[in-house]
Amino acid sequence: MLLSGAASVLCYTVLFAYEKEVMLLFTRTDGWYPVLPVLTAFVFSLAHGAFTAYFWEVMGVQARRPVVQELEE
Amino acid sequence: MSPEAFITLEPHSVAFLLIVGFIGGLVSGFIGSGGAFVLTPGMMSLGVPGVVAVASNLCHKFPKALVGAYKRNKYGQVDITLGLWMAATASLGMWWGAGIQQDIRARYGEAGSNLYVSVAFVVVLTIVGYFVLRDAVRLYRSGAQEETSRLARWVQSVEIPGTMVHFRVANTRVSVLFVLPLGFATGLLASSIAVGGFIGVPGMIYLLGAPSLVASATELVIAFVMGLGGTFKFALGGLVDIRLAMLILLGSLFGIQLGAIGTTFVKPFMIKVVMATVMLIVAVSRALVLPVYLTQLGLASVDSAVMKMLERTSFAFMVLALAAGAFIIVGAMLRSYRHA
Image (cartoon, rainbow over all chains, first blue to last red; front, side, top):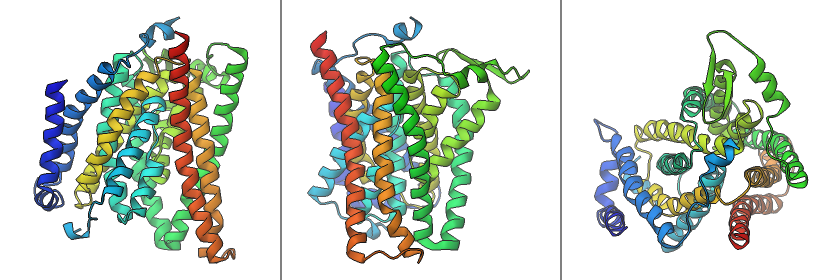
């Protein structure tokens, strides 16, 4: 959890600390620049997605039962 | 678009994006879609140009759907094969729908386009929402398990050689000639009202015979593919505001994890209850603004003060739809938790 949390914080810190530079690069339409928003979204989903999963687990909110069992009943 | 054209982020804008992102994520994690109908007009009310709002919403949608699909796949609810078949034609539907939108805008202007979108909202959501709600009420009253609809049983009985596919998780064997048009309709609706799941999920349940848990989870695969393609298309025009997209994602990933967990707490018919509630309230919201667009097109005459009031009330109903969905989900989870 700590690792994914730190990665998530790092992602958001970099994004907003270099807001102007990021916006300049991410709105360019030449070359491979249009790939940047897509790649960024993948990286954030990996880091922040892992963190949010651990977050609810630590908060005690976990899946009640494997639903696949119910579907097969 | 030059970077100067993008808005300066104020604390209230950030708070709005985080909160709506969380609630939208919660509803998406549970029913497979939702949030866009509040986020896009909400961003526009913060001063974001419409096209940037759509692009930024799409850029948060696909990573959110990815995380949601991954989570629900762990619970055995995602039929990846079905999702990919549907997504193939959903992308075509979205592309075709965008063309229709452009034609309408060129011929009748912005008001014509808004009228088309609102009529699509009202007609589709009222009809589908009514049937979903009727089914949910029937299941609630009878306490019965979900059954395959009569229509789905007929679809499953149609044998077209060379086109039959067994979707293992959805536990249905149907011809892809039924799956592909459904995917197309999902994309078409997504291109006009931004929430294709309102046709995709009920379609998978009532036409293909998928359980509602599987249908709502599989919709996340379709949302991922459509969101990814859409984001790339808008990024080619330099229209994605990555700050807005990632701020929405910040809240929405908390929400989607909770919504996905929520599906393991409640009876499957609750998916239908939440979906029908959200759909019908959104339909009311869009019906409220019809007189505004009719007036702008010169087909009706409504006072400007009344038009402003109708627009505000309509947005309030959109927010209400999302909040009601989230309220039912959290309420159902808490009830289930107490009874455990």
